[in-house]
Image (cartoon, rainbow, N blue to C red; front, side, top):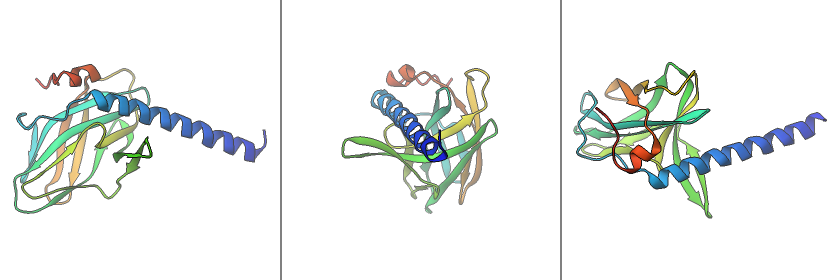
Length: 173
């Protein structure tokens, strides 16, 4: 196979895999409830509190969902997330264009408005753990959230089954 044909084949194969992954998260997103506002904070830094974290692990990635509440008078920004057992964690937003759901990367991060909240949820803003180094499905992922003003927040995110989120039983205990 020539280099040019191999390159076209590889791009086509990668595009198909990406579309399948996006479709999988879209299906999960249709069944998952967003974090409840009454959840007990699981982490805090400065004026920020983190609520209802959950991770859904797939064979080659994981999706992260949680809410951040800003009780302060100044906006903040979630700049990124790190995980010691993954190649990277990327911030994304799912958008529907012409009946097709696509993920758009947000390397600039997500705003957390003063006296407001940022919600990472299926079908909207979320974080993707890229190439997690997992021998088996873990019970939790250890992450660090990086904020512009509040600094770093260490967070243990429980791994849940999508059906647990659909019923609102996030099992955060």
